Length: 360
Ligand code: HEC
Ligand code: HEC
Ligand code: HEC
Ligand code: HEC
Ligand code: HEC
Image (tube, rainbow, N blue to C red):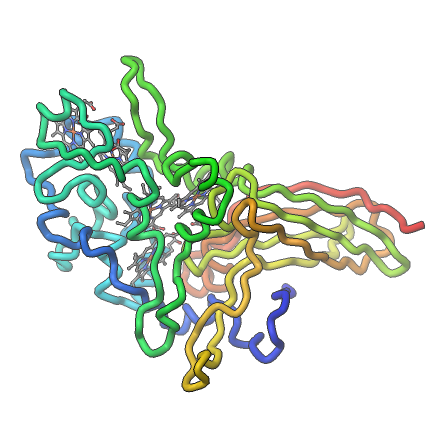
């Protein structure tokens, strides 16, 4: 697979795969948000069994990656390689106070992580029935991106290896630059959509539409291009732009990478990797080296730019080019080396084909 990192200085190429760095066991992150690790905030008292009264929401949540944020095999494999006390603060807040309690950890990001503080239920719109059922405190921020910020925007830890001024995950900052922010579309609009139930009550889906939803993925990016033949083969020009998405593609964890592959019927292929590239480079003051981002080949947040690139297929007989964009939760090699073969092939985002045109 050819790795194309535009404007990546050749000397950095060797170090540049984020996957390699992560594989070396250097995942290190800043502290999780203080309020999710407050013990009183995270334990649900027995009398307040959310599932007993909110069965539908509970069922939605159980199918989400938030519920699996600790048990998820990719997380467990990484925790085994680079365990850190901070991981639980974002992946299993209920287990921060009780690291040996595996049942608490298995709850992942539970109802309490988002809704319970000091014995109060936080809700954007308290209702008379809700206030009768339990203590409810109005929390207008629940319907803003601030409800997601603490865990989805954070810097590298100050571990001497990484540059702690740089984001490890940058989803909120990407959102702030995007047209989604201008248009008032929050994280919840796309990932926790609202609807009215049979009684006209406003409900929020807790199923957390994400990578498991092919229809969400299919709308994330628009791909345009053309395939032009010359004497020795075909040059395929691509333009990728963010479509119904509120941040870069891919966003989130540094493991994420998208791969655009083009091939001819004879099986000649070429690929383009879209990801953040990390390397150890010299600090601005020239004193020391730290790992930081040296290139970003992802599709930028909508409204902030597009990716333009070419693939080359040395096949002079081709009459068409088929292409496919796939999203990998972690690079295929990293998946296999961790025994996570089911994740090696990635997820289809979108695919298509271009007829090959001859240059006149
Ligand atoms: C004894 C039943 C009961 C339990 C237990 C319960 N709830 Fe509720 N809750 C309700 C009712 C009734 C409402 C209002 C009507 C509705 O939304 O269905 C409500 C409403 C809410 C609301 C919306 C705010 C409002 O005022 O309408 C939130 C948020 C909420 N509950 C969260 C939770 C969480 C989190 C837990 C567990 C920590 C929980 N509830 C446990 C019955 C309960
Ligand atoms: C307590 C920390 C925490 C909070 C608060 C939080 N998240 Fe997450 N979120 C996570 C973690 C950790 C994961 C990754 C879980 C995994 O991959 O196993 C995640 C994953 C996701 C995913 C990917 C799901 C998928 O199926 O691909 C989406 C989307 C998401 N969160 C949206 C949100 C939104 C929207 C909010 C705010 C309403 C929010 N999160 C609040 C920690 C949090
Ligand atoms: C306009 C719709 C839209 C908005 C707004 C939006 N997202 Fe997304 N999000 C998407 C789409 C589409 C994907 C799937 C493609 C991808 O993974 O990048 C996605 C994927 C994700 C993922 C999974 C990334 C991965 O590869 O595991 C996370 C986490 C996430 N979004 C968090 C957020 C947060 C936090 C916000 C608010 C700051 C937000 N999103 C706002 C559309 C949106
Ligand atoms: C990632 C954060 C997050 C988690 C985890 C979460 N919620 Fe919510 N919840 C929200 C947001 C955001 C809203 C929308 C704002 C509001 O209504 O307060 C909401 C709304 C609600 C509402 C009111 C709207 C409705 O559909 O009735 C209830 C009730 C509720 N949640 C219960 C729960 C229960 C029960 C759990 C656990 C099974 C849970 N939530 C887990 C973030 C979360
Ligand atoms: C400040 C909050 C935060 C802390 C601390 C944190 N994470 Fe995460 N982590 C997240 C969020 C949010 C996501 C989801 C992003 C996405 O879907 O791309 C995530 C995703 C991941 C993933 C990718 C999971 C998948 O679905 O493929 C791995 C692996 C991971 N984290 C491991 C760790 C480990 C190990 C630690 C401790 C050293 C840790 N994280 C600490 C917030 C955090």
